[in-house]
Image (cartoon, rainbow, N blue to C red; front, side, top):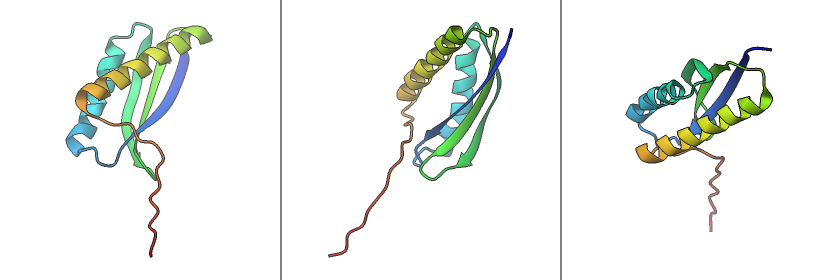
Length: 102
């Protein structure tokens, strides 16, 4: 295998502004421009999830080597975390609100 296709998703909190949601698309594309082995296929704001606004990313890596794939995915993850921190964008995680009546 000379090339591997990778697909991953991530979610941001519902309080994220539309302006920042649109900016995320550019952030992801810019990250891929800096990674030698990875070629982005697409990035989309996919859906309104139960607890997050979900994005989907698909890309190709120019090797079938699993360790190199994991190195690239790790680099992408660190870059996303770093850029989101700079922009004040928060990743979402499952939450639940419980109301108690007295």
